[in-house]
Length: 451
Image: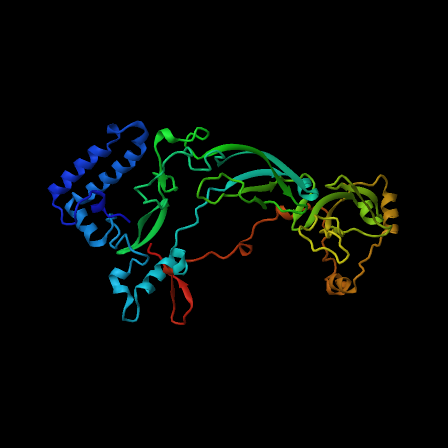
């Protein structure tokens, strides 16, 4: 990298007056207002370069720091023009001793996510990824869907091939980055500890070359890119889950010297009015009267995501109890990327469908005549079937004193969600150790507060 003394065309032993004289001479030569229009862009770059060199070398403190460490970064504390390891200057390249410069460098580089020493190379130069967020329905994820969208992006100019200049233009090496397209910066990672990183040169935009204004490409006007409009297609596979992302590689903006980024579409599923998805299974609710729960029913319970009606027929005498689910195998969501069968099929594995049955009991005083209760009592079992329950709930009459039985006729039905809150049902509070002390036997005791 060119030194500041070379930029000002002076020796390292130059006095302040010699540095001023050299700066005035070069500033007059490369001042943007003193050159023609076609040379102005190059002159601006050169003028910034010599102004920066003059600012450092004319300041006694900054000059001393630069002469000692070779960098203009006052926060660095280590050379800026090193080949790779900034700790070489502190530890003499690691010769001798239990730990050397490379040990310290690798430790701090790994701490910042660097990895082994080869990670010190300049990071990949890539354009930004384009991200799209869309909402889809559960039907879309069940049947699959293709989303098409119009994309307008920058592509490398087809006329100048990304140079930004005419074919006859004479390109000059960028004086700021010395034609490398990037510049090194020193970043402080701790007291007296630094690391280096590469950033794109803002003068040449990473190309390493500059040219005169009049030599700009007429098609892209020197921007090196032109707009392209196309239709992008994103294929949502059957069984995809909410939050999945589809990536179209290298469909983002292009720029000379940079790897093209990707276009990423992330889709989220809207809430469904009937179904709830859990993994690859589907859940739905269906309410039936007590009669159907006891005697069986045959009815369409849901309209599936593909438009089919799902009809359930329970055999007579099959009792559906509160809390029961009716499980229908292979009627859930398609399993994404299911393995293909041995016979060449595409694999049609699907989750299951669970119908949560909600039983509606009759209202109070549902009977028309008292005889209806007798009929129902004759039809339905009116004794417990478990001998264990019978024994547990049977109270021997001989154990009760005579006339010591209370008959309760006035009561209310309490719902589970309306029960009182009890202290023993709540989690124990977490106490601060400062409020407790141990007694002589080691058990924690609350300290008494002053009254």
